[in-house]
Length: 482
Image (cartoon, rainbow, N blue to C red; front, side):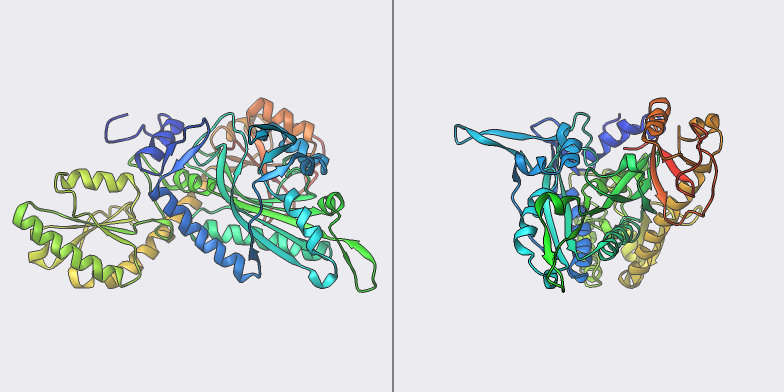
């Protein structure tokens, strides 16, 4: 790796990613293995995503709440499948205040159990339903193979938890959350995710059905980017979440849970980034536009003054803009490379000749039209043109990612073709649905069933691995995953 750049993706995609998240000033490694310090630039990306998702959650009638991060171990044990699924990842506190605790406390890996305990206290009648809760929190899942944003011991997320009168209402909630996540992924992150159901072997521990949005990264691997779970009455039984129906009969509530995390930032990096660094969708970019004044001494002061005037006009259009005018010791070329590394969608260069000509030199992070490079725009028109330029760039990134996904996805019917396809993309194949068969596929190819796509056409056939009849009436998307 050179001082300025990162390892090329084609040479080592993993090294490219690990170097980029640090060089782009998104994160630093935390003091405990597997933890991360999210730097202001990276946290601003999270805040922008969080604000949009929080608005969607509240608009749909949910209320934010805050629950303890320490959960009695006995709570998890009350739902057997749940504790079995999470046991390898748990961080457990056994000593506090200098004394051994009577009951160990689990550091929150997810909150179905503690929220279930309080749902049972708060719900009496069918009039209390639906109960629609959401929590923005940090969670801890001990990670043996950490990677910043993607898999860390501690990360940030939101977790929705709801209770309903019956399965139909709970399923409407489950699918609403999935649609909300798909909207955030496509509209903010410009990631063309595939939405659908997980196979039984890939379900959330304790769920009846799990739904997911899956994105393809630029190395052909999948990234699970948000999940929504219909929990049936499993947690209601364990925590006695019940209500009195209209006939006065005590009935178990049906519950859901759903979450999206800082893993989405990793998805943005790996969906759009290139050998020069980050490529940020405008709607998630901390700075949508950066202005770099060019010149030394008096000329530099004149360019900086004009850059600040232009920056104020751009800001008045509701655009996040930064004027890089306080680092005179750095050359313009260094600044250009830095802002490319940090993924700013649009850079504006402003020097003496530009000002004399009444123009600004505009550079997109990626050309949206073949052969398009720098272009000069009349200074007075820059603020009014930028909203359209940024919107076009957002759309371009989504279309580019969708085209890449389609180019690296193929229908596969033979085992030999399957192995070749999942080495660098996704395979659409028939699957028998048996967990043991999934395990064999993973052992031989490292690929797993990512999603039974909701929009996949109805088809029948035989499992690509074992030859047994397909269990799903459509093809399943397989791929290697993060």
